[in-house]
Amino acid sequence: MHDQYDRLIECLKAMDSLVVAFSGGTDSAFLLKAAKDALGDGVAAFTAASPYHPRWEIREAVELAKKIGVRQVVREEEIIAPEIRNNPPDRCYRCKKALFTRIVAFAREEGFKHVADGTNADDPGEYRPGMKALTELGIRSPLLETGLTKRDIRALSREIGLPTWNKPAFACLLSRIPYGQEVTEEDLRRIEKAEVYLLGLGFQAVRVRLHGDVARIEVSPGEREKLFDAGLLDAIAEELKTFGFAYATLDLRGYRTGSLDEVL
Image 1: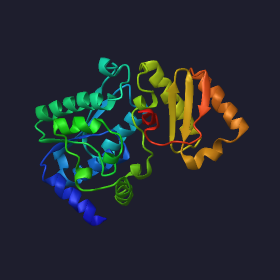
Image 2 (image 1 turned 90 degrees about the vertical axis):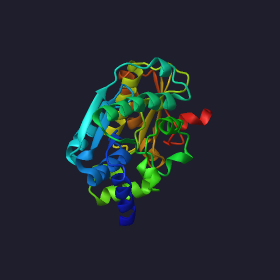
Image 3 (image 1 turned 90 degrees about the horizontal axis):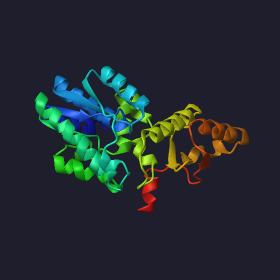
Image 4 (image 1 turned 120 degrees about the vertical axis):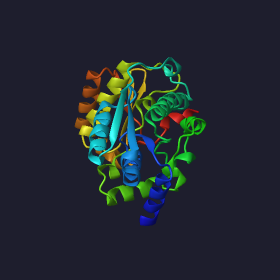
């Protein structure tokens, strides 16, 4: 395990300086800490505060960047871009192309030689159209380049004391909306409110998928039994109504990444 971390450090040192696309998730937090260890002040974090990301996660990213001791730039993105307003199947490509174009421009303005993201060795096996944009823009993925898997990253994060070592994955909120459905800020906020509520009930992994005025709730397969309580189900249904959902349903298979990709 130490050899893996050493290889990553050497990979980062060879870059001389870089900007890390930092969401505050497990992968980008680990990469940012390793980059700080390797490059010191030669690294900066860039965080996009868009309507597609939960606001609580942006706040956590700011706190974590301070803890690691890295300069962070947070850019507010308040407008839903026209090219993804109808949530096309290649939305990740379009979104990442726009986002990383801005990060590359920032890196050039500030004199950083590279831009890096937290793609890991497990990611290429999933449906990730955004990776095409990273390739086109010359974005480095040090975790992928050094063969680090999600399991490796969690184990190493725990060893070096990062609080994100066991943080559940939180993809952007657009992944809760079916392809072809119009994206509105109102819908994004009610999805966020519903997920924060369910996380507050103690569920570790939660997704609230939006289908018109129906909320399709996913919790991790091992936590499904917790939902089989009439009182809890009634409370959830009533609370989600206050967020603007007419109906609340449960996905019987539970949470899995990319469940809305299953129709492609």
